Amino acid sequence: MNNIIQTLTPALSARMLTTEQREAFEQGLTLLEGTTKAQAFVRDSRKFKDYHRRVRQLLTYLQTIDTTDAQLKKKRRVGRPTKEEQAEYAELKKRQALQEAKDSLFPEIKPDLTLQPLTYNGIVANPNGESIASTMPHLMQLRPFLSAPLQEQIITLRDLRNEMASKAEQAKTMAEANEKANKTIYTEEEIAELATRAVKIESDILPSIYMAVDREMGEVYLRLSQRTGDPEYIKYVEKNFNIAPQDLRTQFKPFYEKAQQRDPLFAQTIADKIAADRPEVKATRDAAAKHKAEADALIKYICRKDKPSTKARIKGLRERIDLLRNEYSDIVTEDELAGYEGILTRTIEEESK
Image (cartoon, rainbow, N blue to C red; front, side, top):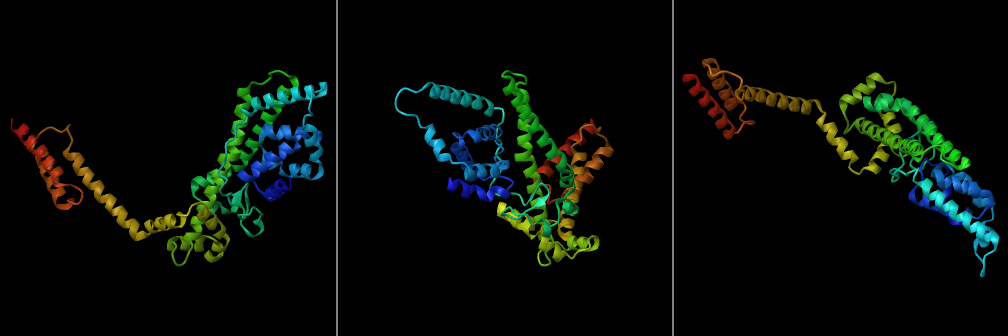
């Protein structure tokens, strides 16, 4: 029990449980199984799998209820069981069968627990989970530094959290209604649809948004570097925000550290991206794209099959083939030019008939 308490105490302020903490929570539920006052808590915890919301309550039970006597009472004595023991055993089997059936209604979609997002539910937290919101900007204040698609996702966060809470509560109410009525008022499909959506929002959709914020803000931190960053972006920040770029870097550094910890290649990836966005590199890239587009246009004209074989068509083919040979030899090979020459020869033969 002491090991369980020691493992779960750091999770009091965490938004998600690690695998070790989840296992400790389940061990705690096993300890409380024989405790009458905690039976409803154990049943609901296993039904809804929302362990991270029940850590404080579990610790309270473990610290205030003597589970030793309860465990001793669970040990069956030698000899023929009494009627009470038979009834208790039958009730236990019934609860186990009911629990197995209900577990299928609440599939557990496991999130990536390797690293907790720095931003969660709009609160900025350090890697240990404690809030550092007093020294960090609120999630909505970060919006101007984020990409347009991610800004739109942030606007939906409140609606997503409301939807998650609503659907989880609906599923819980419907399952309890079936249990109280001892009959099927709501089908398993109806309950499962609501429960699965709530779990997906909490374990997949929301964390993916928060992790995307961590990554984009980590990129901003790197772009604001005077030594290796993006000069154009630094000028943009100096012009549009009333805070020095270096002061922003101080605030944004935890995002970079979190993104780098999650992806060891993060810094190198962003460095390559910054280099590719440099004006001179971009100009060279745009020029190469334009050069290729011009060659493609010439080739498209040569390969057209809807043009009649006339002297004007022959003249146009010769001019474009010569242009490809003289100015676009870096794109067009000799074998391809030979093919275009064949088109010209065939067009001349058709025109002379």
